[in-house]
Length: 263
Image 1 (cartoon, rainbow, N blue to C red):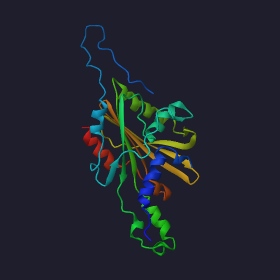
Image 2 (image 1 turned 90 degrees about the vertical axis):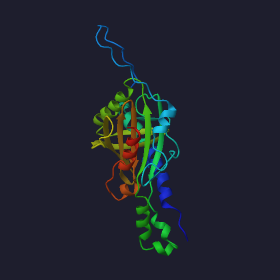
Image 3 (image 1 turned 30 degrees about the vertical axis):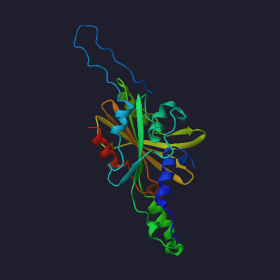
Image 4 (image 1 turned 90 degrees about the horizontal axis):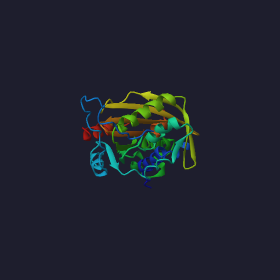
């Protein structure tokens, strides 16, 4: 009997995790003055946000990330304001992890990149093929793939700088963990730690938030990269790696492909 694709099931589960449901088991755009009023050099005009159409042309699309399938975010991105933490200063972290653009963007858009791996159960022709513990091993292997949600957001004035700074401040202030809520679904993160970022863009920041679940600790990885007045956020989960305590990070091929489109 042919088994249904564990990869497809894993992708759906991982998206649920990034939307915070599964893992439960602020800044203004700003404007600057045009001069200092002292007759000195005039400052350059405040940055203007990209339009929604311009932003959609810049986000990764199908066929642009080697080894990954790219498409819409399954289930969509939660509405801003419906995801919150027990301490407002930690909100930017949960925003990044759930695909919500940090700060106060003028426009934003999102995509999902799912690692394209062959499902090991596809070669099984009967239940007996996966007997004696092989089914569990095959299931874990099928779930060992990165699912990354990418959100691009564009800001007026100094909004992009402020958005990234809000995340940086939150990583430091919330290192001891925080609790969160999305539409009544509650979860707890036991710790937050800064990681080495990709180093792309004008400035970048990466972090891990460890989620406390009935099945143990599940790490969620996030990165925020500023490209001028556009911010790219990435949130990655790998269910199989988390189950087997295998280390993983934000998907490097996804960041590379997205950074190339923003140059």
